[in-house]
Length: 164
Ligand SMILES: NC(=O)c1ccc[n+]([C@@H]2O[C@H](COP(=O)([O-])OP(=O)(O)OC[C@H]3O[C@@H](n4cnc5c(N)ncnc54)[C@H](OP(=O)(O)O)[C@@H]3O)[C@@H](O)[C@H]2O)c1
Image: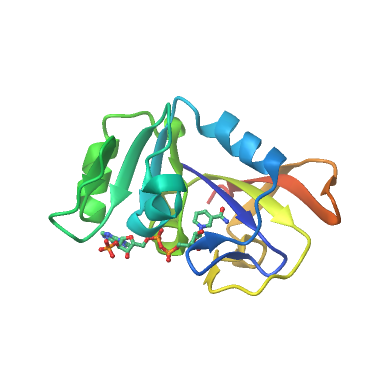
């Protein structure tokens, strides 16, 4: 399984159920990477999207503990076990965990590739992603040139889980 996330310099990812910043080239990268694939998200991340709607041209799988929850155009699952069963239908390399914090933490042990947009700024935040540089379990296999969006500097970094 893959994951894809944008983090700030403190590995922060969100505040008040919103992204910290929206960088058009990062949104484009996200779209290119996930289109035609399977995206797995938490209920709060689904509800953070425009209109609370699933992402187009992708199979959307949403985790919630609410048995009555429905979202048109999304597959709803209620436990990790139910999710893993559902994911047996798809090749692991076509599945992307897209957040938020609770779902990244839940699925990180099942991920072997992480596409991380690293933004060189520290925002006020209330949601974080685990620091892969400190974990010792991940290595950087590719890093883009530094990109800029107005005053912001960021780069696209690919991490792969180290062989045991
Ligand atoms: N920077 C990025 O790349 C990025 C990407 C995605 C999201 N975000 C940000 O992350 C924040 C949201 O993260 P979050 O942690 O608050 O919410 P979240 O992970 O999107 O969703 C949390 C919800 O998922 C469900 N859930 C979690 N664990 C579950 C489990 N084991 N089994 C069944 N359901 C489970 C629960 O839904 P119920 O309450 O319905 O039971 C829970 O309330 C927002 O600020 C968002 O903008 C950032």
